[in-house]
Image (cartoon, rainbow, N blue to C red; front, side, top):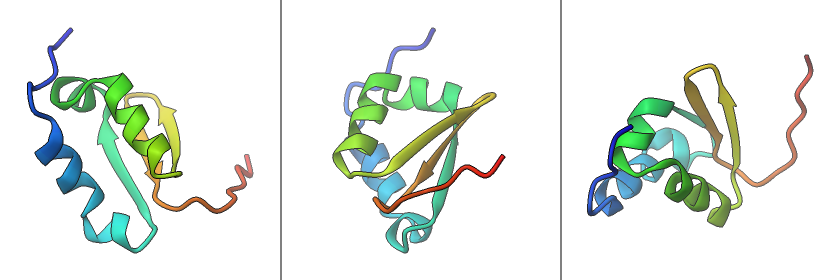
Length: 74
C-alpha cells in the first residue's frame, strides 16, 4: 500500500481541469495511481463534491464528469 502525497491539490486540480472533465466527458485513472497520488477516500470525496459519477472496474476508476443521469445498459 502506498502513502498518498502530502499535498494532493495539484494532482486533483490537474485531473478536473482536463479538457475531458471540463466538457463533461469521462476521465479514467488507475486505481493504484489514485491510491499513490491522493488516496481512495480523498479521490471519492472530490468526485462526490462535484456531483460526478464514479465507477470502479478491474483496476480502473472511471469518472463521468457531469451530474446528469446515467444508464448502465449491460
